[in-house]
Length: 279
Image (tube, rainbow, N blue to C red; front, side, top):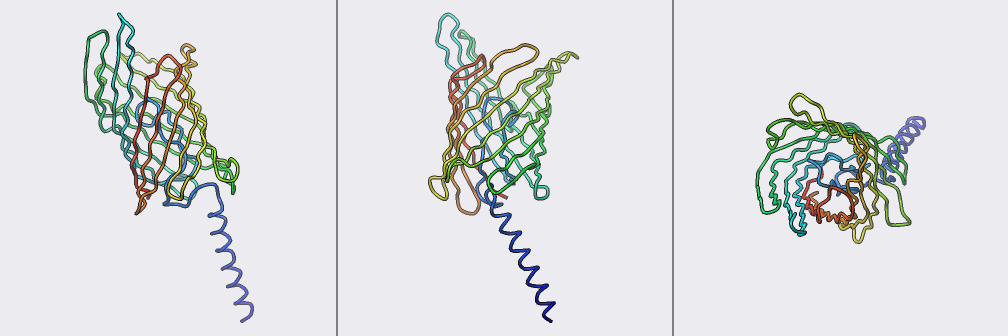
């Protein structure tokens, strides 16, 4: 009898210790508001957007708008680019998760020297696989791969696909704040008239998050992208401000503001509004 009681007590202790170990990590408990970078930039879908390092499952919708006003004459130009992205992420085991994202609507207004054009489009999409590779009570790192699928009605004479591989991290900054970020290597590929036109474009992101209330966190940082091939050029550098709000019943909202300050391919302002449901 004593042996049986000791065995039961030992099993209960193991379960309690395992639960404590899962809770004592740098990631929030499953089902709470996701913590980490928000997909930004002006690329298609979430391609090139550094993801969270923490395993996550959610259904989210992002509404994004990018504005460019270049009033210099005679080459006046401007643009309004807006899109709506639908994304679902689902855990696969305790350390891995999958994502599927699609630009369900894309609207563009372009004005170049008085010549204006508008258009609506659908697509493209991405599919990704993510895996936590190192996790302690304070630090989490993850590696991932993402594929850009050539589903895009805006392209009439060709298709664009691509591959992205990268890693992300989450670590403490003092007693309350945390640092998030990562590095990605994106390789978009355009296929036009049977010819292949590829590019090699690394992306880097670093930002810090500070919880103001149990249901509210704010973040600030910067992202940058360069092109290494076929030619070297500096594409963009963008400081960014973020906020996340936890809502009842596992719903959440987030806001991302980006203000590109340098680079050859940059709008004046990029704003994104997110709404999601943690699964």
